[in-house]
Image 1 (cartoon, helix red, strand yellow):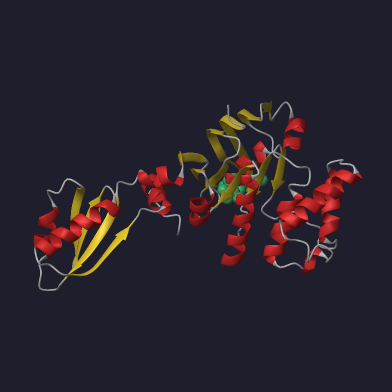
Image 2: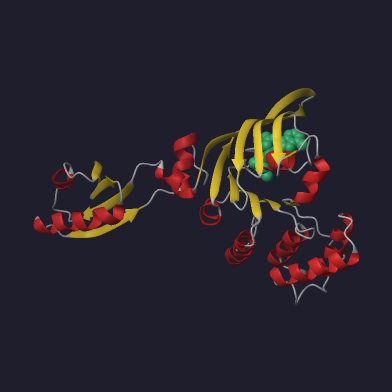
Length: 320
Ligand SMILES: Nc1ncnc2c1ncn2[C@@H]1O[C@H](COP(=O)(O)OP(=O)(O)O)[C@@H](O)[C@H]1O
Ligand SMILES: [Mg+2]
């Protein structure tokens, strides 16, 4: 059994539009099992239902219908037990800007009714873990975006939860601070933490997550490891750029019957070969070109990306 499990989870909101009440189905019956120790990502565009799902699981929003359990506790019936097991870091964070980092940590510990010694020990550990030593005595309002985000994640961990929810953890951070926070999250994983994060960044889902659920319009459209998802997109593409006096159709013909070539296409001066695995196909392709005395101007290999997966599943690109 997964440490986070849910089945047919639903949530609707009523919004008012020009005086008329309108129902918005934010989450439309999703089911999933997440294992202890996984870094699991909800990947999807704005408005997909990622935050709503996370907030229902974190007991911050009532569940309309469906069942969710966290470490075996029913989220609807045992919210207090669930809150002790999880840490939640929202998209907007929850720091008091007019308190120091240390004061924020202590306040957070008090909210969890921890005793003074435990708070002190936990704060020391988190200050070390998140490299906050040099800034922890400054007011939070003086922190850079990356520093503030590190403090916010630390706040979510003060009571030493088994599961951490992170809503868009690196939104708005520059590449260096994003990479830094990814390393901190990887370190949490190494310590056995389960992390459920939301993101609309393809690279974040790809590099950081053990598994991903691609979410769109309140539903899960695909689940798997980044590799499994990308493997759904048949093969890899090898693009051969041929000399202008050569006919691409003739060159493509040379490869058509090779067992490792699934498909050939031509596009301007390029021959596209869709192959099962680029790395093993490339040497064979070089050999054929050599035997036929064809010099390629360029050869490149492209692996499918998570965006190709999103495009295939939804008909839209996540980049737009
Ligand atoms: N409190 C709310 N009232 C009305 N509609 C909401 C509320 N919260 C979210 N929604 C709507 O639910 C849908 C899912 O939102 P959300 O879960 O925030 O998506 P995401 O986090 O993937 O961007 C959106 O259409 C959003 O406008
Ligand atoms: Mg959101």
